Image (cartoon, rainbow, N blue to C red; front, top):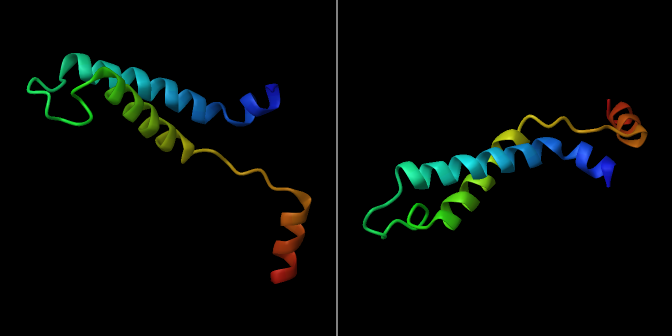
Length: 77
């Protein structure tokens, strides 16, 4: 479990920060008429923010290379 948490910490951090940002966006800006799909309800805005935060911070995750992948790359060259 600790290994999984450590290897996915950027995704988790992105989801948490995005969720907070999504909720704050709903609270401060929101949608007064209720016709906006994302910002009309706090749940929608929070989940959308969590998704966007996960995707944003997921860009910065470095892939772990295994011995097999390294060997295969040398064989191609």
